[in-house]
Length: 345
Image (cartoon, rainbow, N blue to C red; front, top):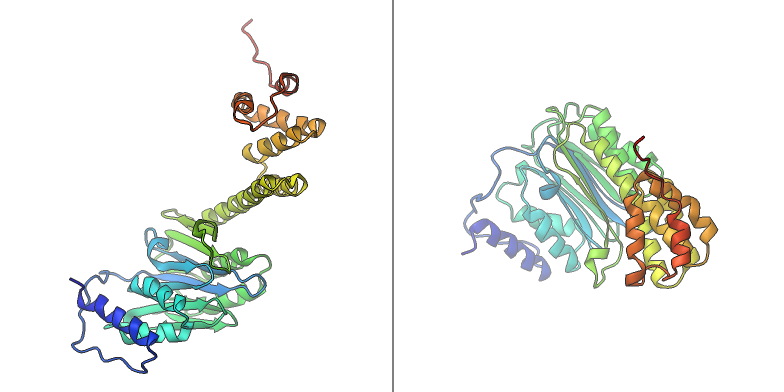
């Protein structure tokens, strides 16, 4: 059976769809799954009008905060639900946004259906950049929020009541793509004092601007730091790596379209971002050698083999599956670059 609380959320959902201005709930629902403690959190939801990307980012002194706070769907919107977390704001909020309701309509309906809105802190941004936010009167101080054009910053149980304003200032001033600006807001919150209890986990989720039939391709960044003494530092490291792999993935896509020049440009960008990873060097070298740019590929192969000679063994296996020319002379020329193992004297 559906418990009262979940039933009320769905009543709200269908009532908004029918454009009923007010909801009749009947008996007051009782909380069934509220956590015993609040999730002290600072977060940001935002829309990037330059490319339509939508994102949400969060940091908290709570294990695996991204698994309950952050929600987003390509072409639909992004949601942060925190304080005494009710995940229904995320799941049902996306349903309402998907049905064509804007952020304010969605948040209003779910607050009306909630037996305890006074302990919730929720922010939403839809695919048109409309923003809505709610900080309940019984969220633990310091708690508050600040909205701006296409974004909202919110926090609860902070050391200072200046955190959310600092986040907004940082987000507006930060350069780069949306993921960089979201991270800048989190870093500003931490610099301002952050969670009064400290730090533990962080997450960032950025999705594309269009709904498609391939949802696994719509998440541009989906990164979590579940438990770390310095979660934002670790999150920044993961974002850097993710950027490199995004370039690698675009390169692979271009290669399937026979755009070798475009693919190599993407691979070069990946190498520049993450030069310590041999993966970023090996596959561009393979592409170069396979497309006749053998001389250009040799320094890259040499560098990879010096990092780890097992990549040479991988290269030997590629011709059998059509991933490298079946040319023994070419293969031997490249394998001659493998560092020689010194024998015992």
